[in-house]
Length: 62
Image (cartoon, rainbow, N blue to C red; front, side, top):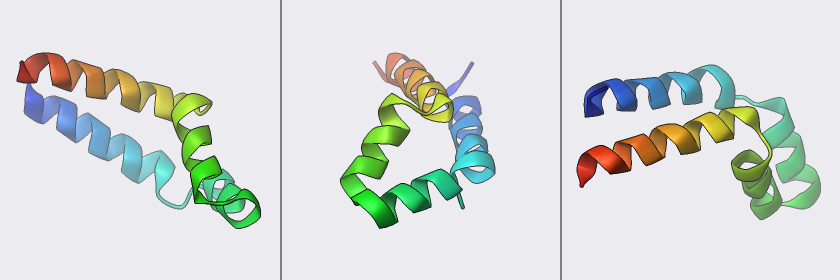
């Protein structure tokens, strides 16, 4: 994969699953921004995929 493909995949994931995510919105309301962010990074399957794509992007940048 090249950088543009990875960036496009990341954008598609964010647009499809993260924009308007009910769970993130609810966590932000009930427990705050930091808790919602932590959930997205550590527990959400979409966050897992985003981390993977980000690490692949970093490998290409070096």
